[in-house]
Amino acid sequence: MLYDFLDSSDFFSSPVEEGSRSRMNVPFVLADDRLDKQFLIESEEAGLLSLKGHRSVGGMRASLYNAVPMEAVEALVAFMADFEARKA
Image 1 (cartoon, rainbow, N blue to C red):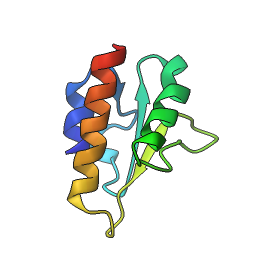
Image 2: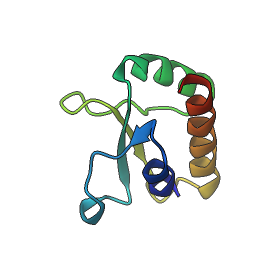
Image 3: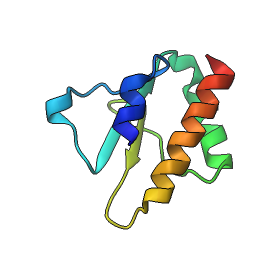
């Protein structure tokens, strides 16, 4: 679901080629990296935590381990769609 959203967005994208993507850790970037800080602030306010990407890579990273329910992924995608609609 998250990769489908990223692939259909002009505002967000995945820096990883389709055949090499992880199902557990989903990195993504915003088209305008000046919005990264605002995205992280607003996502945390929405209860979506620890989305900051690895310090050596940057961007964002959603960790979707076994304990993460589908509702959490749905909430993230809904937040991202709203953020895109407001900031694009």
